Amino acid sequence: QVVLPDKEQFLMPSYACQRLTPLESHNNKFTEALSLLAENAELNNEEGRAVAFRRAAAVLKALPVMVTSATQLRGLPCLGEHSQRVIKDIIENGVSNEVESTMHSERFKALKLLTGIFGVGAKTADRWFKEGIQSLTQLVHSGHELNPAQQAGLEHYHDLNQPVTKAEAEAIGDIVRRVVLDVLPGSEMTLTGGFRRGKMTGHDVDFLITHPDEGKETGLISKVVSLLTAQGLLLYQKTTRNSYMENKGRLAQPSSTMDRFERCFCIFKLEIKEMRPDKDWRAVRVDLVVAPISQYAFAVLGWTGSKLFERELRRWASQVKSMSLSSHALFDIKQCKYLRTTSEEEIFSHLGLEFIPPTERNA
Ligand code: ATP
Ligand code: MN
Ligand code: MN
Image (tube, rainbow, N blue to C red):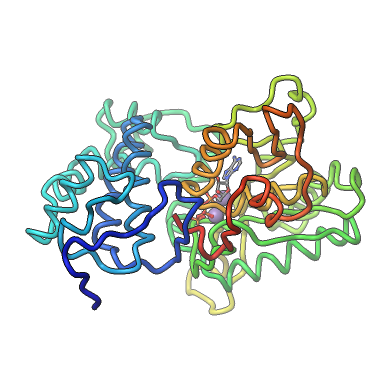
């Protein structure tokens, strides 16, 4: 363990996209506490508070040493009073009472359980909680009509709350790639999301698909979904066509995380080798996204995450560079023009940022 002399201060730029954030942090006990408070704020629909805790956690994730004394926090960006108090409590007492009581509160436990159902967001969970629903059994007996996503989410609750391994992600990748190439030879597919950042497990598997001839990719997803369905590989799917051009006039809000690509959010039925007594498959959440080659670099960047890293990139673009970044394009507001690129490296360079490799985007 490296102990810093008191008063030594770190040089830490304030936007997460200006610094390296590896997967392994030296400050897990602090970042886990702050992330829990962020999650709680999200469940309470307190977006601003949630982002403040996420930014504070990200600063500690990027620190090259373990924090052992409050004096080390001086000069660090994004650490508000509240976050500093939580960190100090943990330094002094080993735990933060606020974090402990939040974690064990009936409300937090119930909302976490309910939002663990695919298709259930914070607002729905909160409404149910206020009606006294705190368990899956209570939900089932409440008589609430669930939409198809929620029904599938409830049915596969256990599997979908089981981390997906890299090996499972690759197995699904092999199956999907074969179908994609069948439908459109020459297509390219990239594993994005957390796995591209080097994570060994994830809550889902994210794939991005394109074709070197612009336009060929149009309509690809529905054909892929038909074939996968015919093979009995999809337990649930919701396909959306591309709606980017329809809204060209009013540019998507820079802070909006939803993009307009052709996509399919689905639940995959993955055969598992080691036969379990009850069943020989498991359910896995999979996101399939199709991007035209001209937007591919933006799409890869936008789908690699982390969520906070993406948010910070967009904030940097708009606040510092007067640009608007999305998963489709980069628009220079002062020059009033789109900046073309073919690689992530070029996007960072347009933004005046050092290139941050995917494995260092774990903010
Ligand atoms: P995990 O390993 O838990 O899945 P993750 O980082 O892969 O973590 P995801 O929720 O799968 O998390 O999201 C991956 C990336 O895709 C994130 O950067 C997110 O911003 C982006 N993303 C997710 N959903 C959408 C969406 N509907 N529109 C645009 N981008 C999205
Ligand atoms: Mn993911
Ligand atoms: Mn995803």
